[in-house]
Image (cartoon, rainbow, N blue to C red; front, side, top):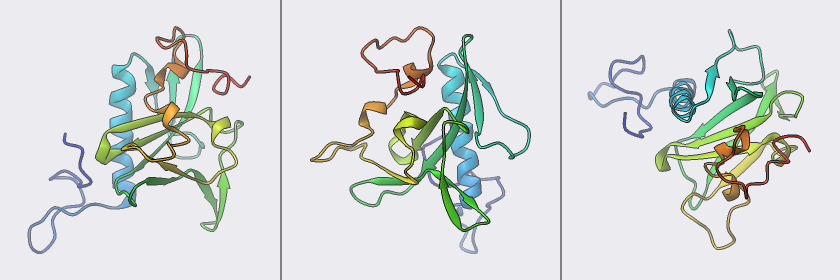
Amino acid sequence: MENSAEVPAGQRAGRDRKGKPQKGTDKQRGELAEMHFMLKAAGLGFGVAKPWGESERYDFVLDTRRKFWRVQVKSTYVARVPKYSVNVCRSIAGKKKTPYTAEEIDILVVYIVAEDAWYVVPVAAVAPRTRLSFFPLGSKKGGLYEKYRDAWDLMKAEPANPDLDRSLALGR
């Protein structure tokens, strides 16, 4: 599947009156990003489980054979030049934005679809923010979260990158 903001033909979004594919709802695009996440995580050797329903604060549990990680997945499809921004919070009664905490999730995974870029960020590096900005194409100042790009090793029992500081992910 191409990295596209469009919901593939045959899915619920359908086509508009002119026959062009519709982009789908935010919910549908989020579901597609979650499917990409499952494929990516499984391909990296993680066990992947999805909780039943949507009552938990996390979207997935990753199994490294030594630890279970509670993972919240967020995605964005559109850049606000020169950055991509993602809401990293939950809403209470559809109004108040509440940041995720270490009691709710362990890791935030952000997928920037248009760039096929993954950021694996410990919740301790996020809280108490409710919105994050990413610069996968670079910036003059450098992005605050660039060190977490493709940082899947944060969760692995045997990290391939020993230079990656795992202390935030491990709660130290």
